[in-house]
Length: 304
Image 1: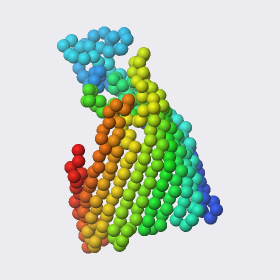
Image 2: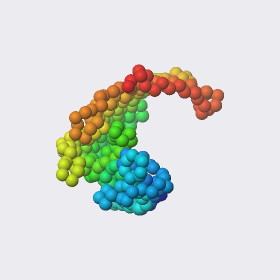
Image 3: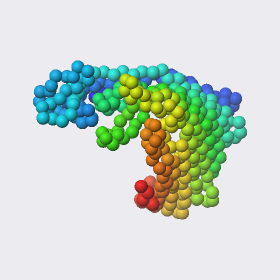
Image 4: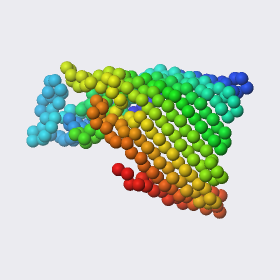
């Protein structure tokens, strides 16, 4: 595979009203090109079969072939080119209404081309590129010892690409689930509570709704309109405590992830979980703070 990206972009940044009002605007145009060459046969479960054995004549409907004494059907070797491109504008405005306090609004159009792997796997329909329109309004405070942010956002997806592990095939697959609307908020706080003791906390809420049913075959649709997006938890919480005493730094952090649906039709979910990590660091002051040794414990409570 040869994957190539060329991009043209233009941007503007300006400061007005004694630098309190800041404006940024731009547009970019990515051009993706995928030159594909699959020299082996690809089975209907994604595995490759490289052989000089003569296959059967291709099935006139599916294009698949078989081999004598070999289980399964296979797609013959393939060569081709895929191209994707899009015009993507963006705009952001922020205003510092008080010292160390500002509000902002932003808009950006996004684009995501399918992974190269998907263009080879015959068990997946040809995945279309994903596009987004994202809007955000927020607040920032940067007071030195206290940093705080809050943002409300909304994203509208077309041809939303979802990646999930398929236990029957034994691999991860991508697929389009049509239009999806998401909105939510993010907030964070960082502060030095007392001398050398710092705390950081964050919270994110994510509401998602699939807008369309998706085709299962020529006559049947999968009823996912109105369902939540698969593998998307509503709540994600995080926190960290860090204490420094001389050359020693100790840290404890935790993360909570709410339950998320594991199927498109929302009839099964993965449960919520909370994990904790611990780290300690010793810095050798003799070497201008550039040499240290660190010890980490990941998943302190051994949570599955």
